[in-house]
Amino acid sequence: MNIPGGIQINKLLNMDPARLAFLPVEDLAAMQKEVDTLLLDAKTIKRLFDELLEQRYSNRARNVRASHGKDTGTVHFDDGPVIVTADLPKRVKWDQTRLGAIRARICLDGDDPDEFISILYKVSEQSYSAWP
Image (cartoon, rainbow, N blue to C red):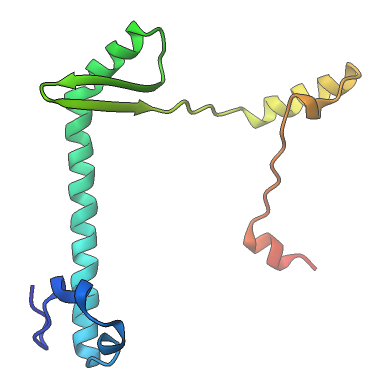
């Protein structure tokens, strides 16, 4: 792909950044647009390819996991000469309101809730900035 000033976008990787920094602003703007388009195309291609792999291997990976007595994790199986690795991480999402109630109950029972529950404090940047 050619940029108006004659620079090919695929040559960017081999060019000296100091030289690139002094290109005419029009060339830089055109390059920026081309890079953004390439990035968007690459993300679209990656998403489509991931969907293709999901369609091809998800059932087989699920069956292999089941045969090993698990519903998450990494499994390996052959597809002809290729070894396929399928990973399905365990994603646990806790109900924060219920956890708060459980924590209070642990305290009422005289136990230390920190032995069972980890707490993560978060403050948004906007709240932090508004803090006197």
